[in-house]
Length: 411
Image 1 (cartoon, one colour):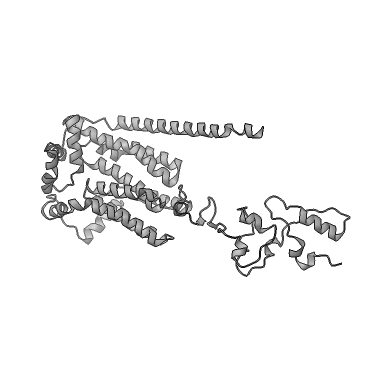
Image 2 (cartoon, rainbow, N blue to C red; image 1 turned 120 degrees about the vertical axis):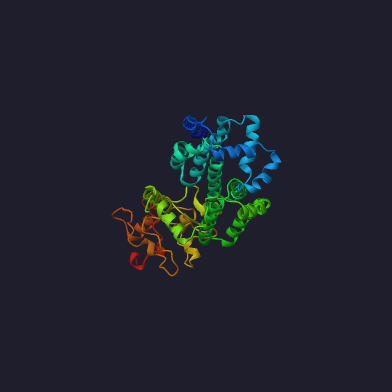
């Protein structure tokens, strides 16, 4: 009867999982619709000069666009996509703005996916809401420029990077290479984003348990980016030498520092969002340091024995092939180490007593003994102690031959 009654449980779990999936899809659709409504208020606004240049370049023959951009200073991906979009939709203001709207609205599910793998379901919905209502994305969603596409690809790259190297899921190494190369083909300033990811990669390599394997995976991902971007490198070098905005000047150290302080809200004429940016960034770092990653961290993907437990420090699981006591060179206690080898959790206060050289019986000192019947001889009471298990969460009382001398009855 019990087996028959237990059968519906997997069905209930499947139904609950299906319901959660349906609610997630409906929630993302609702956020995307709201984002679409917000980002189409100025859909038919007139072009400004750079938008006119985008349409003019995209009207060229498809395979002539890379050559035209040789004197423009931009990579070709967005213009080639815009060429295909205009061939289907049209080349008016609203029609060309629509491509950027697609990219901006697409960031809602991408933000949910990227955050969920790192910090769980709550962070995923917070990221999706932020992507749906972010004012900068709303502004660039209504421009015939490549900025919305660059934001979408940057978010995709960040999500793939975190899964490939922070969570050490090797399935995302190829997506890292693809999204990184697409970023470089969208905007030249993506080089700075990739440079920042290399700095993060170095920090992850320093803490990796197997640095050689991590370096191999990093070489595969970033080597793939370089290989895919290699055909455009000659054009990029030519653009760097012969093109540039007429107002652009090479900044010195003083100008760079002044720009940094202005961005943080400390310089004259800068915005006041710098302190808020520091607070939000500090809160994010504190949250990441105070809890394990939702995917289990690098140890979960690699199968390490050191795995973070929620709400507590790292704890080493018993290795295969023996109990912790046996690996420490101390004989096993019958009836005590057998539950440990099966993964039974130790009672509070027992941690650290299995270190090499420790007294094998130290864990039993101070443990409460079960209440025994009165009126029996010492031998009978000792036999009852051996047969009666301890309280819940405690180890069994060791057999007579492993108890301390003062606990044994001498006839």
